[in-house]
Image (cartoon, rainbow, N blue to C red):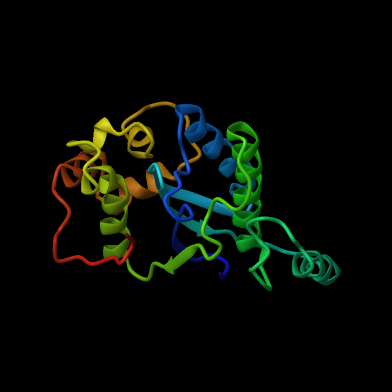
Length: 205
């Protein structure tokens, strides 16, 4: 992953597991996400589903001393943590995601008295290369619960960033930038009232 780049980040649970069993699971994951990812990336949209998630982020420009990078790499290459054991040469952005998965898995395993990895080891990351893709991706992420048949309307799913966009409360999301992509909040809402274009194949599911 490179600095100052938009990425669509998504991952699934292992096998038939669910990542989130209770409402508290969803909110705890978001809390951990903010802790690990906010220092290294800005967030533009997200959606948490029972067995997978989607985030649209933009990595920040980070400055590290050479000694710090070397030390971090040494630690990661010898790590036996649940979610990083098969991941080599993690950069700071991938490390933040791996730390998130590890932290959440340990809490989840303790709560539900289970053992082993919870997330797929190889999370997906796809660079976003143009403005049109950004717009369709935000819409796709928020429409995911409708796409999978959990709800009929985007607003009916409580675990996505859509609610932060229609709220006036403070948020870590880059709402103003997203509204600019849609030429304002009204056009953002109008666009989200449309169904997903069936011709668009994101290869995300």
